[in-house]
Length: 132
Image (cartoon, rainbow, N blue to C red):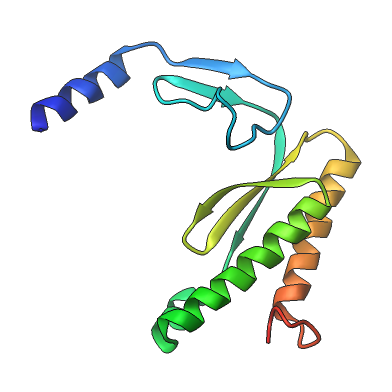
């Protein structure tokens, strides 16, 4: 196994890395997202969301409750992001990356900020079922 890993790492390091510029946030089923020394580069405003105190939540609740909390959290984030033109493309534990296509327009930047503010409110306001 070691020899196989070493050979693949050498191939990755030694081979050319091909980057393709694109003008959209790629869909998760996009065939341009493949293994190999390939990458896609696009211009986007990025919003990163992380659940504060998630370790304490995991340690203080049973598995079913934790699963429900995470599902409600993810649903809230994804729904708000999509409503403002954002695309969630990375889930990592309790963190998510949301891409808003472009960086040069006030609308794109405003949508990202608005999404962040709406997410914060929904996840922290006592008027929201997402918090409760």
